[in-house]
Length: 194
Image (tube, rainbow, N blue to C red; front, side, top):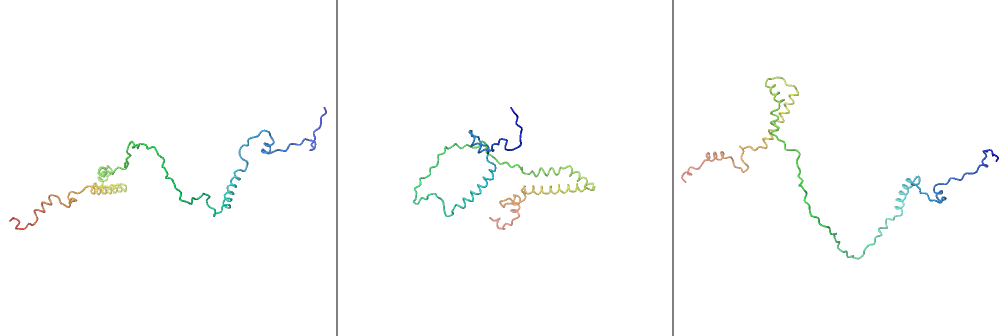
């Protein structure tokens, strides 16, 4: 068999078949291939269609045309709506009654007052004052703060306790005051005659 020499001339070589797109290839082939995913540019096309559809609906919609729902012209006899029967459940009381607890306890003024009076730092400052020694700024500030707080606490404790010397709420005085009033009162002279 004789060998043929390769040539670069276009006419001598066989022509290639033109490439087909997937859709055309699917039509040509006997077997139907599944297409995976959507076509390129699908997101932009869908967005454009949504915008166009909104504009088209607004353009074609006539504001004079209302609802197509039929209107009843006569008085329609409406049947009373029957409420669905619900199975009544036994009311269950909660296991424990929830109580709100105040987390902030009421301040114990007397305890705080005792703590201030028994403060070792304050005792040392008072000892220095008795000996007439000079105090530092920190000691003076500490002393002033504690004394202000001490004064506030004593005022609050005085408000909480009712003084016994004052007349009670009824408007009556104590027994001693009543006896003194009786003794000092000026009785008429002819009172003894009765």
